[in-house]
Image 1: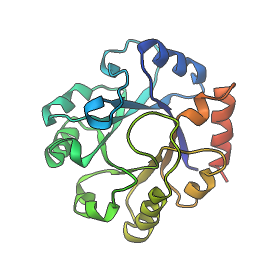
Image 2: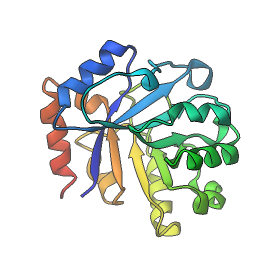
Image 3: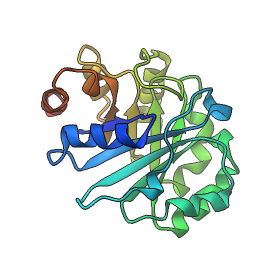
Amino acid sequence: MVKIIPALNVKSKDEFYEKINLLYPKVKHFHFDLAKEDFCSYSTWQDLDKIDFNFKISFDIHLMTYLLPIEVFRWDKSYIKRIFVHQDSSNLDAVIKVVKKIKKNIYIALRPDENVLDFKKYVNFIDGFLILGVDPGPSGQILKNSALENLNILKKEFKNVKFGFDGGVRKDNIKEILKFNPEFIVIGSSIFNEKDPLKAYLEFSNLSKI
């Protein structure tokens, strides 16, 4: 079964809690997008490290921002499990070392126009790849077919490497992604833009079992 992880691409703390409450307690694992305009011409609410809640929940965090390796220590929180970073956001080698130091899983995030083969040298130092179906930025973008080629390459050239998929996933295209058997699929607008987000999440989860 491929795990479905709802994406929180939000503009405020209130929106953050609102979206979590739409799915909790059925969902206890979310994907958090942290974006800054200088990196992707779009910005989100960014204070995940300052949240205060009384329920058990965990997050993966996608850093769509330029950052210094030392800034990674900000995410040394018990509720953060995986950290997704871009090669051009920082000194990637140094970031990998810091993420390992704080004992989190690190995945390299790849844009649709990047080729996963160019990152082969990192395979022994990371936990996996996050293949993006869209460019870094807002939720609700249309899937770019070039992203599927990276999935195809991963299955052929990286036999034992974990990977997830994020961006542009809808009910009418999820089977195209599922056939590559990713570890997880991140879905945002196709869940939260529905009248009943929990129902939409459960439908995607059922599709992922097929």
